[in-house]
Image (tube, rainbow, N blue to C red):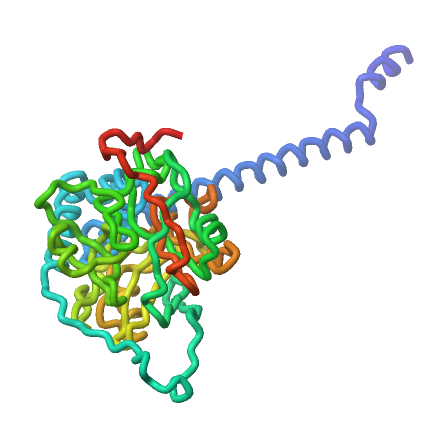
Length: 386
């Protein structure tokens, strides 16, 4: 009896056996699940690697892939991350591409502009004239982009605004509110070291109210300008300061390229459109009205941006006979009376501080725009000082 009792105590109960069996089943089930998940992850990695390999072959070894690759590079070239483009096309190709575009831009500025404008005659009976507002704002959109066209029906109402204080640029919304302008658009470029510039050191020249406010070029050098003469005719192209003086230049900044000359588009296709980016451009119709195109960008789901070819086509569709590019990227902004921003600037830090803006006034003769660069030499201005 004692032996039987001892042996019986060593046998597991039925409930214990069932518990052990259930635990083993759960372990095997969990193991299968874990193995299945790992196999799934492995397959996904393999598929992604295969797709990545196919994509790389397509990008580097097919004509359509090369087009996409260069479009990506051109888009980066127009941003503050230009150096990243070398990882897509290589440093040598990047340097070659930038040089080719620069030569193309220079060539666009050499054709003689012969366009004329016909402003309403002051002797015309006012009752027979169609009443037009000073400014009109229209939304525009296309493949991948959204933006605005600002039409200024009287070009003589435009003045070039500059910052109020030395040492730092000014937001266009602040310029508009401070001066009482009815609208404002960003103007020329500026020195931007490490993309942290203070917006106070312009590139090239700045001319406001017929006076040279800033000169960053040598005496006999030429520069690509965008601006207006005393009669409200748009001036765009490559000129020396003496030539600009003879043309009676009134308001101007340095920027490029000119994209429409004598009613003809200079950019032949999207391939030459200098990538996709936020854009600002200025143009003029035969009736004298000035067109500003402002395109938002770098905002997926809303607007990625436009090429210069896109902007050129918008200008042509609106009747421009001359047009030129202005500073774009995170500088692109359209502001209405009171300082209200119309578009959606792309900078994550908000509206940028800039050295110049084209401002529209009901009565520009009463506006005081002092020269804050007077007495300063370009070499004495620290573009990165906060």
